[in-house]
Image (cartoon, rainbow, N blue to C red; front, side):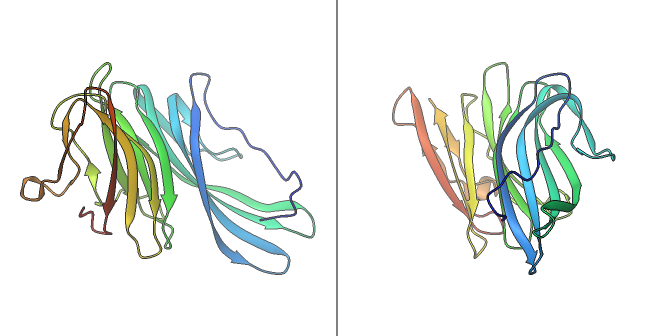
Length: 212
């Protein structure tokens, strides 16, 4: 999106444990001198964190331990001057409970909505994979939801991508269990059973309305 030269760096985080797991971006507009992109980051944070690297404040406070986060920025860059015209933190959201949780991956769709997959702790060492969606303005959407395992073991959503037609693909792994990969309820169960007692890989495809 530029000349390949160093352009800028920003820091976010608190005095506690914070980490970024992935990022995605999409080009909004481009002219002969500027381009405008949306950039989203995900990861985990603890304590109270200000996700706005500028003078403003867009803060979230973890419920307990570490929570997963998703944050979106808009950047306007001038090719002629080599500097940012503006760099804005649009919104930040968290996901998690009373144990350590993490948002592992995210992806934009063509409308600027952000899909994410996370590992949400259901105990001290057990996790449930989650797929969720935020609108372009950061509002929580009804797509998907928690892919709740049918037994409490070690289950994680690790990657996610969205096709141009709006289908959502996600992959991860689960352990020693049968899990229902369809979030649509008891009438639409889509079970997957582990082959062995170790970690087993899983992948899902969902339509825009969340159906597997």
